[in-house]
Amino acid sequence: MESSVEQDQRETQEQGKQPFTKGRRRYEGVVVSNKMDKTAVVRVVRRLVHPICGKVINRHKKYYVHDERNGCQVGDRVLIVEHRPISKLKSWVLVDKDKGKELG
Image (cartoon, rainbow, N blue to C red; front, side, top):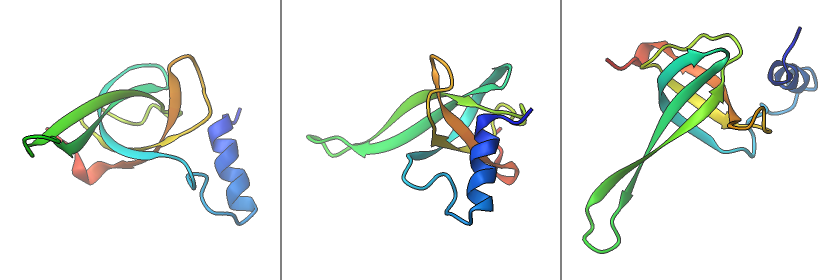
């Protein structure tokens, strides 16, 4: 059976439209857990400058991501895209996995 994510991707390709990621938030992060079925936890780090002292600060947040094929491993650098809510915690979908940029 085809998932809703794969169905969205297939429909946009058939209609010749832009990829389904257009107009949605996209983040790049590192997989920190993949112990759940079809779900991975991705840690996204953003850098900002402190408003008073000017020091660069790292802020991070973890996102629950839908991984249809269970293909990502801990340490993989991945691209995630906002999607309609899939479950209580999952509103993000795994789009791309860069195998060459694995972290130790």
